[in-house]
Length: 94
Image 1 (spheres, one colour):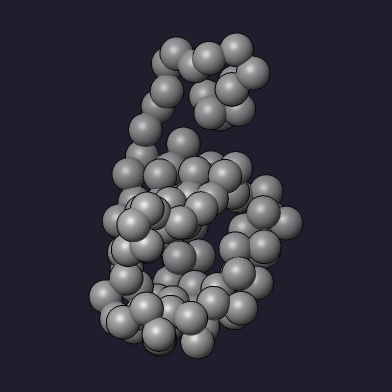
Image 2: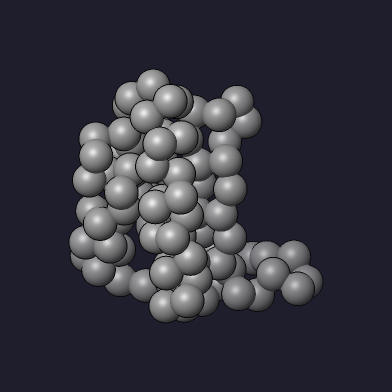
């Protein structure tokens, strides 16, 4: 399991300008079977994505996010091996 923590490094106005393109990128992550869950941080300083796949491939995929391409945000990726999950959340152990 990979936890992708996105942090804005540019003003929110710049993020808003690229939000549609970023959301298309997010949709591709779901369509490709990479993403399990995603959403904004509160307060709005970036976002989090729960993902699966190989770390090197995810690094490469994150580099194509329009937020990264346009210098709006950066990713910190943490790999975790969940050993215990609540009933119904078994996908997190993948």
